[in-house]
Image (cartoon, rainbow over all chains, first blue to last red):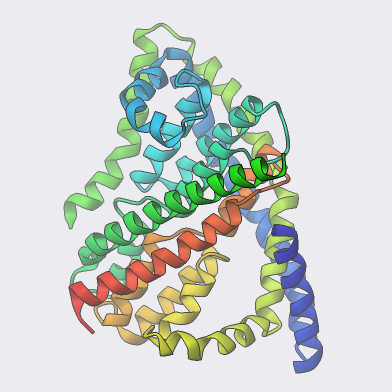
Length: 199
Length: 177
C-alpha cells in the first residue's frame, strides 16, 4: 500500500503540474523535499544517540526490567504474542510512556528498538508482525496527555487560556487510540479467518 | 497552566537523574554503556535517510504541483455536507501526511480565526490528538528494515479518521459552535 501511495503522490503531482503550469515549483519541490529529509535525519542523530545511550544504561542496570514489571498487566493484554520477559517488552513500554508524557523525540528511538526486537522475535522476516502493527497503531494514534507544542503555539497567538484544549485533546486521543486498537484487532482476526479459509 | 510548563521542563532531567543514580547504585559502567548504546543511534538515524528522502520528496511534489488542493477540493463538498467546518478540512487531510505541513496550517488557522475561536480550538485539538501516520511508519519500519507494512497503514489512517471525528464531536460538545 505504501508503494501505491508513493507512486500516486509523485505521478499525480507531476501530471497535475503539466496542466496548471507549475513544473518549476515541482522541480524546486524535489530538491527542497530531499534537503528537508536529510536535515531532519541529521537532527535526529543527536536525539537518537543521546536517548539510546541513556536507555542502554537503564537496560544494563536493570531499571528497565523494574519498569516493565510495573506495566506488565497492561502490556500482556495489548501484546499477547510477545513473551512478558522478552527485551522487546521493555522498549515497547518505554516508548508508550514517553509518548504519554509528550516526549515524542525520546519515544522514537525506543520505538525503533522495539520494532527491531520484534523483528528478531518474528524470525528476522521483513514483513510487519502482529505486535508491530499494534505498536504502530498506538504510535500513530498519538497517546498524548499534555500536547506541549500545541499549548506553546496557542500562547504565541495570545490565547486567553492556552491549555483549555488539554481536556478535549485527551478525549480525542483516547477515542482514536481505542479506535486504532479495535481496527487493529479487526484486521488481525480477518487475516486469521482468511488464512484458515484457504488452507 | 504554570504547572504544565513546569512538569514538561522537569520531567526529562528527573528521568535522567533516576537512570544515572540507579546505575551508580548498581555499579554499572555508565559511560561505557552510554557510548555503546549511542553508536546504535547514529547508525539508525543515518539508515533512515533514503526512506525519508523518498517520502518527503513525494509529499512536497504533491503539494507544490497543486494536486493536493485538487484532491481537497473534490472531497470538501461532501465533508461540509456531513457537518465538518470547511476551514478545518485541509488540516484534517494533511495531518496524517506531513507533520510540518499540519503545524503550519494550524498556525495559519489560529492566526486567522484566533486561538480561542471554535475553529482555533478544533484545530488545536486535532493537532494534539493525532500523529503524522505516514512519517511514523516510514521512520519506524524504515529503521528496522521492515518492507511489508501489512495492515499498519490502513489501521493508522482509519484511526486518524476516528481522531478527527472525535475532535469535532468533543469540541462541539464542550465549546459549542
